[in-house]
Each structure stands twice: as C-alpha cells, then as structure tokens.
Length: 296
Image (cartoon, rainbow, N blue to C red):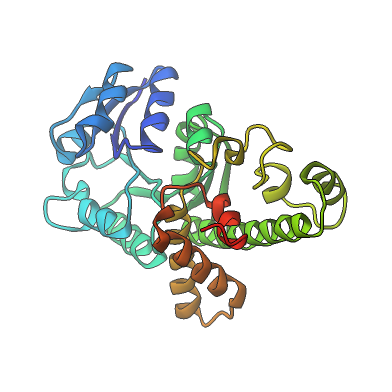
C-alpha cells in the first residue's frame, strides 16, 4: 500500500482519488475548496492543510490542477513540491496545460532527482468516476514504468506518448480533432433537420457510412440515438464548453509556436469562444449545435 498525495480533487481529481482509495491506496488530499475535499475525505482520504503537507513523506504525488499557472506555482515556485517531496517520490501531473510549462517542470524535476510524468487524461468526468480514463504520458521510460501501476487504478488505457511534454502534446492534438469533428457532426444534423431527415434515420446512415466518428456514435449531439450522451440531459454534465475552449487555445498557442497550419482548429476555437461568450461555458461542448441552429 502506497501513500499517495493528491493535490486538486475537483470534478476530475475527486473521482480519481476515490478510485485510488477503492484500490486500497492511502490518499492524502489537498484542495483549496472545502466542498471539493468533502467527498474524498468521506471516502477515506486524509486531509492535508497545505499542498506541501500533502507531499511530505508520500511515495507518489498526483496533481490535477486547472491551468499551467497553478502547476508552475506548486512545482516551480519557492516552497514547492520539488523542495518538500521525498527524494525518491514519483511525481505525476494529470493537468491539461501548455507544453512549455510541462517541459519546464520536467527539467527542474530531473535536476532535483525526481521521476516526473506529464499524464493528462481523456474521458471526462464519467470516465474519472468509472475508472476508465485514458492517460497520455510524457516522460522517461523509468517514470512511465513506475507510474503505470498507479494510473491503471484510475484508467483503462495508459499510453507512453514520448518524452517530456509528449502527453500534453497528444492531449491537445486529440481535443482539437474532437472539437472539429463535433462541429462537423452538429452541422450535419442541423442540415439534416432543415432537409426533413429524422435524427435516428440520419444517425443510422452516417454511423455505418464514411461519416462515422466518435462524436457521432459515442457522443451524439442530438437526443435519442446514444442514450448516455449529454444531449439527452439538455447538455448538462459531460465535457464543459469552457474546458474545450481552454484546450483549443492551448492547441492554437502550440501551433503558433511550432509553425503548424491548423485552420480548422483555429475556426473551432473561434466558434467555441463565441458559444462560451454567450454564457454557455458550463454546457457540454456538444451543445454548440444549438448555436449552429440559430437558437442561441
């Protein structure tokens, strides 16, 4: 049984920490939100008063934080995780952040003698709750080998994408594609409606034809064909538009830095920025079909 410090137990981190507890790991949790901490503590975690208290003596440190600035703060600023953690501790950051910050943490962690992995996730809150997340990992072979047994307690697919920052790179490429495919799927249904096609019939045709994609068959943006999709709950829950927009901005910043041409990614960012600006940041990202119909 390992002692795992878990910093950031919100919508994603909370279920992940609870799955570690279910796997009989000892979890020492910290979050700035008492409301976020409560269900994790009720599940058996021990509360830490600060992030530094959480990591002291821990075998593994897992961070799940909102943005690169938070990751920079807890890893790279004075009185950071790197100064407080046990020297043989394994450090895993599951946040989705900019590649530059991830690589900076890798460099400093390596200089301090730590094994560090950037390991952003895919699968949303539902995947975090079910323990079916996919982890896209960047770091050394040694760090990945150490981290895999821990990550398997929270997910189903653990992939070593490459070296420092490769996990973040894979995540933003994947989510850029997801946004583009969702917009296309929504446009197809919106056009089909105007042309008099029933949702179910169009779904049956497209899901067995060349237009088939995950956004259609697993996350259909119209209610009915995929009962578990957020479209059946008026687009509540799922993957919030504000989070998709965050990932699209990360992708565009990375494209600019790398000199990559991503016109559809840029257009997706603009559309989701408009949808978010209309006050729909908390709505599932498939809800953009409402804006494309002219309903919002």
